[in-house]
Figure (cartoon, rainbow, N blue to C red):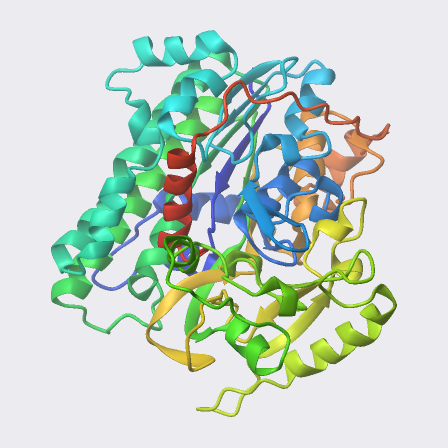
Length: 533
């Protein structure tokens, strides 16, 4: 019997959710079921990881720990070897702590986790099902757990197509090449069958296996908001949209209406005795300018671009996804737009590139001063409003893998790492970008109709789900069970139990790595969403 249902909504924000659950003039009520959920339950803004980004944030939801402890900071894991920087994509082996899926399995609770990033490969001892997200379609069968689940899904779900669960890169690139109303609407519409496929998989597992913890993540919310924010943010939408604006608004409303139906069916299937939770990894807002951070660092004398000799290798490097730098003359730089962070290069031994170890604190303090001094030439406003030191914001055994400094921009946008000018450029149109505050909601037995309560932290989701299942909360979790999410009577009858610390992750190797072409497809997806260039 399903005791706890967890529905992840990637990038979901109350900015959009609140309008979708209101009866708007000329549009009506787009998400009637979610409206009833919000009236019957409790909600809170959920503060994301310091850099509100998909991989570290979902890992914090799955582990109850900050990135400094679980070890995932970005889409890309890079190693600075002095004369060169090497990179690869993060995967499940990089999560250096137990996830709630493993904890539940140890406690003899069955689980199902669908479409969550960095869940492949599944632990061999997992009690339940995992169908991972963020992997190519050809790897889906191999990384579905248990192995026979994929065949069950394939043969018993009418119209099941594993290619629709993964990204169709050709469609997305084609849509980016055309900005016509028809093609842009088709791109948004492409996510409708993807979301339906994930719903069908969740419906199948919930109906046939009834795991005690049923968890599914819908990611179209994030993808649509990245590309269609001007038609979702009412502050940007024309008062009487026509033509392209009207078409885009309608297809966005169609997506959220369909999503509402999927959620209603899953909640109804789970039954009235199930506690239901919703969370997002971050929120969304409008980005209005571009900060070319490496160009600024060059102006301030912290880095030098590599000289191109016109060779094929030099041309490939200039066209690559990472800054093409002269490492012998670079002391501070940004690796990826998604990191929003600065890495300081410290020499391991005399003569190596980078600053001397004893100069680190002084160097970093001056770098912070220089970063905060940057002003928008058009408005005079501060561009970087906060600079986060890694030891203060990413404490833990993996702190040294974090960026030395993480930047918070005035509009919460992602930086650019391109060698372009001007350093600060206004966008011709506002673009969707991540906001640090996502959503956290609950409804069901023992959960009060309390409306909005105080801000929660992203690490609070994991202990809340374990508590709902009656599982003790590991003593080394950083998050806590929010008392405001449960009635006093429920908590008196079900006190929070503290348990032993989490166990070592013990991740096994992937059966087969992604090849270079598949990795490049993932990179292209990240480029399309603005995480890379």
